[in-house]
Image 1 (cartoon, helix red, strand yellow):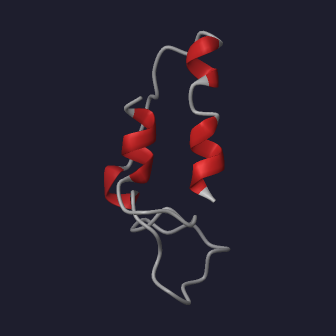
Image 2 (spheres, one colour; image 1 turned 90 degrees about the horizontal axis):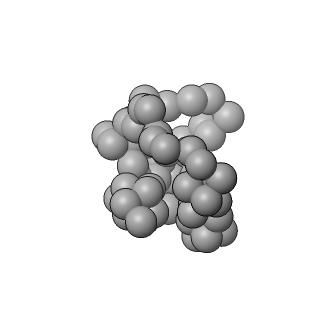
Length: 60
């Protein structure tokens, strides 16, 4: 679940990571019900999330 990952989102900043070099905003949404999550998809994140959750977490 995304919420657990978001809770740790501040760790890279504390460890000195200055930036996220690439982000696919168009994938910042859950995949469709029944979609094969074992294969990377260029239209969704592949994790349980609300649309826009990664952008919100990375925004601080």
